Image (cartoon, rainbow, N blue to C red):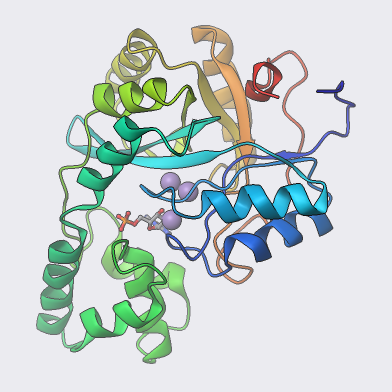
Length: 283
Ligand code: AMP
Ligand code: MN
Ligand code: MN
Ligand code: MN
């Protein structure tokens, strides 16, 4: 498409009611446009069913759009997220891979409900379900919203900090997709793989090195540098990682809800100007 100005605003990571966001894909498209986003991507967890409405609405309102998904992956016994951009949402390999990745979420949610009941908070599975826009995609966020509504906590973040974080007492570990599979599905669907919010992972320096090397070996191309999950020092830290590994750079708010997200849709600082934006080859 056309050239990019310095003020070009790309927001290539956010969530709708198809996963754990609070707005439907068409509402998000309108909000992205209003917020001054020039290029937008909806990247629901392990799901493509919001893509058609995102594409259609973006087209109707004159907003540039890149298809997207955020895949749950297990690497070295920890969960990492890989964003796929520019994927064909009708690709069978990707659709089937995501279907397998979603399977098991319902049973896991029942186990989270049992853990919470044992901690004195009954009815959380049923409660979380009422917050899930997509019954195939019950996430920890839906539990956190229920526990806030039920009055146990005043904020979603507090529920994660006390109960649902990866080593929290109500967390149920999952075996998600392998890194190789996730990158293979994204590649099969013609997309580009991006490491989501690397600053959130609790790897040692050695593990981080091995993770970045493996990602690159499996064909991964880009890394999120500017994300709502990073602190300002982490913007610099992961810009340096991008330079070191030759990764392209991405940016996205990881917007879920106006009350829960640190960065609102489109409210992102620009990428460091020496890095190659991931969208340069995609639009
Ligand atoms: P799940 O896929 O069910 O494990 O849920 C993962 C989602 O929970 C993430 O996409 C975030 O939206 C949210 N989440 C995970 N860890 C945290 C955390 N420590 N603080 C806040 N939100 C979190
Ligand atoms: Mn989420
Ligand atoms: Mn994520
Ligand atoms: Mn996300």
